[in-house]
Length: 388
Image (cartoon, rainbow, N blue to C red; front, side):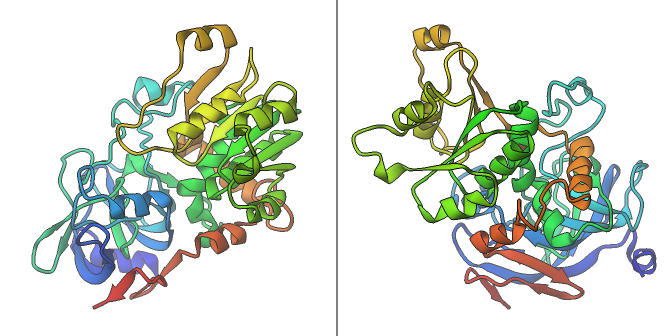
């Protein structure tokens, strides 16, 4: 069926529905849009399922660049390749794929290295365009350009994505689980697995028990951490966190005259081996670093603060304490090689085991924003969307 549809639409524009953001903070509007055929090194994808990441909300609210409007948001998704452009050899029509915001060209020095997941051929930017020619593949019915988001734009029935951002996966994986592997879940699990390279028996502190923080907890559990401390202002997160391996909980509102770092240092007799900042606040990065064990502790930053936010450490502190501080984009994962591993581990019930470890239903319950796109109907259930 997919092949027949592809034969009819290949190398032709497709008219379909998309959730378009016209202005910052305004409700998304379901509109008919035109999706151009893929150019060289590009594929056009029929989106099966997409979820909402907090980054979508951040850029939906943002008024100044890198915010551009009108725009089609969305970057956590799974779909099927509808058609391919010239010079595409690794994918074909009908392949099940996960589009990922982080490029993996497989050709540059960094992509070939095991030390990095930051592609130097296509540097990561929050660009409104396609990578190679800096143009858009979306227009509305009046011919107005619609901007891309994080090279994915999954809030559309069809989207065009550069092959550097596309990972082929097992078609048997449930779509409403797999779409989360294109950003949040992979970022958290990968941060423990790849960025931290965590050893069994480690003590871990996680600042922020949202979806990414819970994914970090699951990654830490899988790596064999024996103590996982969740830090959050919401006490309800502890019961949820237990399902992901969290053993202790620190409520930031109940620390009295002590800082969070002081509380954790006392709990751990000197600090955690690994600390993860998953909220996006410079102040929490400082707290995470402060409760990281001297000598070998590592602080991994996954959250992004507002533009211009600064981190300040004394040179004596950095030298004398012997700690390390690193950023972790997409959990340090290489999209094309590591994401299929996570998919296989899920299919083998080693990772994301719904029965008793990583229930993605809990994440859906927390987010309450998982969107299914079926046939000709673009169904989004949220107060922030209206239909024309």
